[in-house]
Image (cartoon, rainbow, N blue to C red; front, side, top):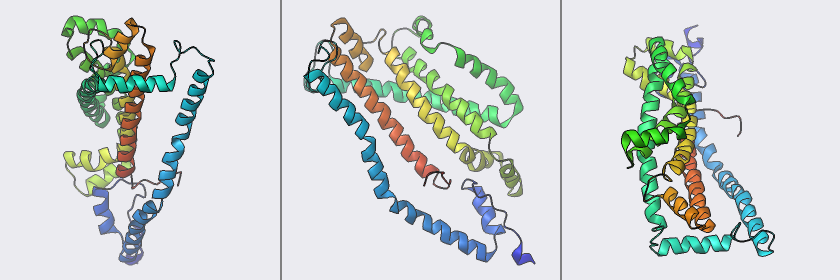
Length: 308
């Protein structure tokens, strides 16, 4: 009977154009059931808000435990403060760097803003290029044979070994630092996005033909949503590489930034200043990763997870 025909539904298909086919192909009873299930999902997620907050609190246990052990080791003299300054000394140094403009280091917030600007520009350029190249290589054999060999060659290059060449080519300003961050950011995102595009269900391509989607609609409503899990993994990895590239780039021929602080502190044997800069790098890395995880939960709310 026509009313009992199976619905043309992909359970794990991303939202977008697929939803239009679902609305057309599903019988009324199935559509009502799907609407009830979909409407119930946000309620379940709101019910998990308390659990997520509890998980966030539990994630703080190990860092706090490390700080406590660190303080005890310094307090009882198990390690010399010249080798490992106590957390209280590091905190005092951080406050001093924030409240005083040091002739050797500048201010912590000033250097932080310079580093954030470099990472933001470099990551934006690298991520855009990496994603664009992944789409070109992922959607055609010609694009793959043209783009992928170059990206694989670039992936095997020692990234930090390019710094002397970049200084010769681009000078000692911000350009070589931003380019280094951009290259480091582009590679992980390209690899993950390329794999995600190639793993998109072929049935979704058939879906686009049924709906007579244009090439642009195919990319924006089928390919990119289907590859979004892998793309977001690539974003997280790219951000990590961007911070690593920044650490090295800012310690060479620079007059501002967190890496500059570390370089100056090395010359003056100020291990407490070095630890302050390293902790700021850690906090920034965790913060950017947390922001991506939030975006991932919202962008992939349609995907069923193994962990409830």
